Image (cartoon, rainbow, N blue to C red; front, side, top):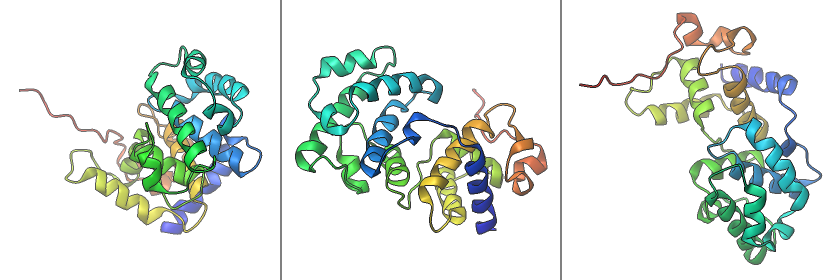
Length: 225
């Protein structure tokens, strides 16, 4: 079952992934930098909103070295309209630290990444998986919803977050971690939507417990007294 699910998910992603600007890169360093910038911008912000800001930002700051030499005012100006300005400050400070202390190369180390300004568990996991192809998965709302529905879990179950994590460990492949992490996010965003999921195009429809039960509401809210 493990290989069947991961193979279906990866095959779907190969054919249906979006052409996002941070997925276009020239070489390893360029990929790492673009993943770093995109992950900061995508914190609490939708992909379609981020795209024009990302393109504008990369045009002015095409690499980490150039960004590290920027002043905060210029970074803020490029960030204007995207909101959550602390992200811009944290990204700039992270770039300065990486440039001065790590010879301009973002370290492929989960704990070190978490020590940088504005990088928590999710962002560190996403960077490790997407940029470095390491055995990590960033579990955002899209991924959580997809896995919960696939295995028929509700969010009021004891240790719900841990269950989702363990189920992901069960189905993830032994390689292609970058592709798999992005595939999960993509399916959650494009197919397994919060409302009206597009089950007819889901690669794991036949394996999905929620589809079989025709019950897609995995969130249980406590009634107010």
